[in-house]
Image 1: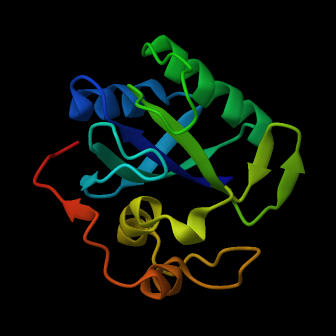
Image 2: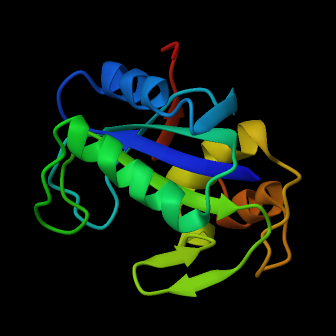
Length: 161
């Protein structure tokens, strides 16, 4: 199954946190492509450091629930501590899409809600999957990004992951 992940970090060595998260995915989750790295302004809770964000296309034989559990385990292994919602974090890994499936279960909603309003997700995702069609909205990632308009809150960096 092809899946898409969104990764972000705004505490500590942000680039290293992203690298470590990607390195922790195999063997269960195999990354096929990774976007450029973007520095982004925090959304929802603005009084915190800027984030580094990337998107990743990967493949797995795991169920969506197993993927979510694996991602949460990686976050904890890297030292993520749950604080306030949308607060600062060492690492955040979101399951954005699980193929074209729609899943709505307790604790698991795929596609990830809010994608269409989040430039920090759509901009990196459009690097690697501009033609992927959102299974509920019926628009491509590129179209969703264009609907948001130009975002000054998301800046491409020269950081290599």
